[in-house]
Image (tube, rainbow over all chains, first blue to last red; front, top):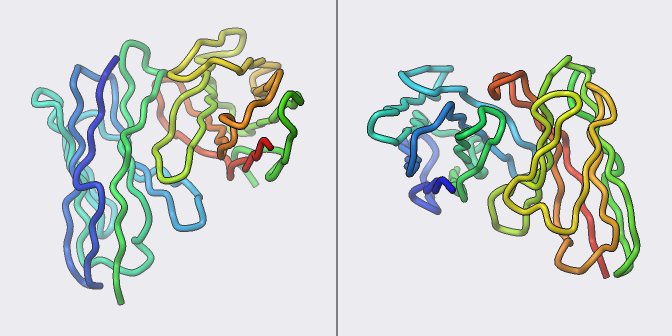
Length: 109
Length: 112
């Protein structure tokens, strides 16, 4: 099956810093999404981004499908950005969505 | 409120007991999913249902069964619970192709 690798596994930053999270995948995918799991366990869909670039406030994402990677950018980090960020890909079937192991982000005040 | 509703939120089972986790969505989504998340780990797909009337195995289906009761409801059954099934279980739904992916709040299951 497809391999989804996220880096770095852990990231600790001061409030106000910028960060880049990376997701590599080993095969062609039908779509790619980014999720945020907050410290209380709630999972929120950030981006549906099979290709190209999207922005939503301080967050933006870019997927280069031909090179099999996606990047999530967080600018001017806030403590509420803390949590785990997952990328998830769909392959073979657009409905079979597999998650990477996540990047745990801690923002210090 | 629109979204994905899971019940129960917490459950403790003894080894060998059976139970069914319930999931319902009111967003008219075609696809529904069950994941498990172990401590410090990512989410692993157990089963999914691309559309009403179909179900397929995910990454870790052993020890589980599912039923897509109708378009709204997708249940997960543990026939004989084992301690290795202690985990947090998440249900999710989406439009065809994964658009609008929405998670429930999770069920924390402990098997003793």
